[in-house]
Length: 58
Image (cartoon, rainbow, N blue to C red; front, side, top):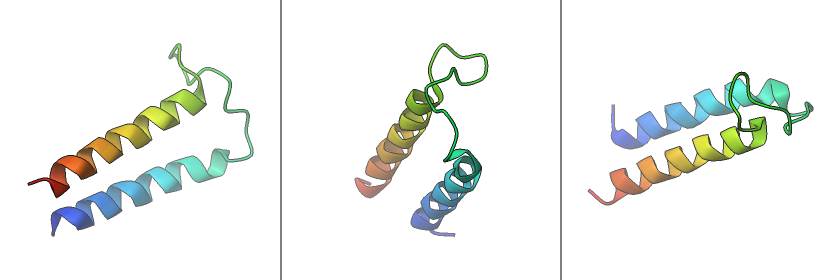
């Protein structure tokens, strides 16, 4: 499997996990975290972006 395919798989996994909650209140705490669901999702997206940039720069 090529590195880009790993990234595609990661994106698919995140979309699958988040899609059921698109009509929910994202301003509530994310589980036991102090962060809201929205901030947690943004953090996950940033992590994936950073990973993609690292992979692209190699």
